[in-house]
Length: 113
Image 1 (cartoon, rainbow, N blue to C red):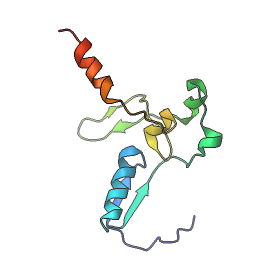
Image 2 (cartoon, rainbow, N blue to C red):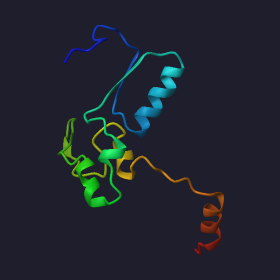
Image 3 (tube, one colour):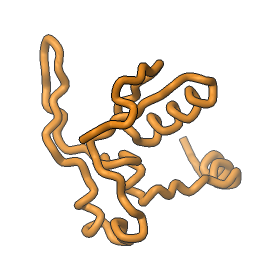
């Protein structure tokens, strides 16, 4: 694959184009830094690749074995994370519903110690 900017120097390389990596790239680039993001997964088309049921969405999951390196490496097992641009946000098709202020109030009123 031929990269258009393969010899350009950058300030920051972010590994993982999930929710955190995406926000970090946005903030750093708006601050004037040159940013490159790397991600193991493909770019998905929400109109074609996403479905409204969990069984169909399982194909978007990252179920490869992952190992944490170090003096005592260990396997991480299967986690609920997506493989592709957007990372774990793919599990919810990129939709994160915001709580209403009353949701927090209800919890504090109804909760009994």
